[in-house]
Amino acid sequence: MSVYDVAVVGLGAMGSAALFHLARRGKRVIGIEQFTPGHDRGSSHGESRAIRLGYSEHPSYVPLVRSAFENWRELERLTGETVLTTTGILEAGAPESRMLQGSLDACILHGLDYELLDAAEIMRRFPAFRMPAGHSAIWQPEGGFLKPELANALHLKLAREASAEILAGSRVEAIESSPDAVKLALPGRAIEAASVVVSVGAWITDLVPELKPQLFIKRQVLCWYEPKQPELFGLGKLPVFAIDDGEDIVYGFPDFAGTGFKCASHYGSGVIAHADAARQDAGPADEARTRAFLERYLPQAAGPLKGMKTCMYTMTPDEDFVIDLAPSDPRIVVASPCSGHGFKFASVVGEVLADLATGGTTSHDIGRFRIGRFSDAGGID
Ligand SMILES: Cc1cc2nc3c(=O)[nH]c(=O)nc-3n(C[C@H](O)[C@H](O)[C@H](O)COP(=O)(O)OP(=O)(O)OC[C@H]3O[C@@H](n4cnc5c(N)ncnc54)[C@H](O)[C@@H]3O)c2cc1C
Image (cartoon, rainbow, N blue to C red):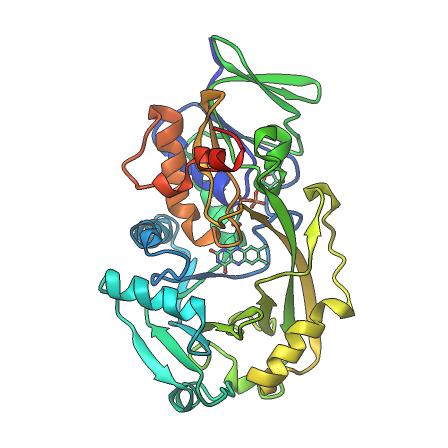
């Protein structure tokens, strides 16, 4: 007989949301985290995450991101806190940019609110930008940013209030299937549950080794700058943005917290062999690319560097997520590799994971995230 209905392993973005949804349904749940929740060694720290509706990666994400918006607003209603700030989102680049074309396709297919802006209009509306002639942008008024540390903490707070147990500072070393329960091995302890959500982010291949041939971890560096003209970079002056120059995509956020203007390269600074190897070790070489980009596109941003943080993307070959039941045991739900664009979905992925862990299925369309899609490439099925 299982002690818990569901055990959630990993309490980052996906795990804390799942724990909340399970606890509010009255399930006996435990959430297990190897570090202290809110730590800066995974993928969910760094002050802000972009959220956008016109989804350039594929239009089929749009219904899911709509549900995510609703769930973020519900989290705000339940807690009285602001986790989602609407700034609009500006995606800019040369006419051949795949990001621009993808966003446009999604906006048209789903009837979303958008405008096409030429370089002069971009600079008129947002004087922080210097856009080369010929560049253009898609402006989506519904985009903005989320506060990841706050959102995760609120999910955990609500989960705790709904009687979820939280075990922090304990690493799950193995997951074992037995006829009666799924067993988790921890240092000096074992936990049994009827089902398990594995939301361990970049550590996923430790517990689901079948995914190892498919996944890789990218080291990402976030940079904060003290702009030369700070008045161009505050809330209301600068939207969340991404610029695709053909070689990289650099994205940034208004300075909403007085911490400086934050931006980062989406393509990152290399691959790391294991999540344990990630360190807060960003140095001068890490910001060279971002600074060169700013000098070209947002010259008034390129003032003194105020700080840097490293973070990890867990990449799949097609850059879509993996959210599915494990082929080896349908009581194990896998939800981790989010290819660097998963945070905005956490509020709805938590609901999906609760559905899968308790009923094996969900009404949300997650067909794109099947684990078995890798089987054609010789991976798991
Ligand atoms: C720099 C950067 C910028 C990003 N920008 C955006 C953005 O603008 N918009 C967007 O939507 N997404 C963005 N993302 C992606 C998004 O942040 C991630 O997809 C998301 O945060 C991943 O959440 P997660 O829960 O899967 O992983 P995590 O938040 O890392 O959580 C996994 C947790 O599992 C724990 N864990 C691991 N192994 C074990 C174990 N064996 N036992 C117990 N606990 C364990 C870890 O300690 C960790 O706390 C960005 C990511 C990065 C790094």
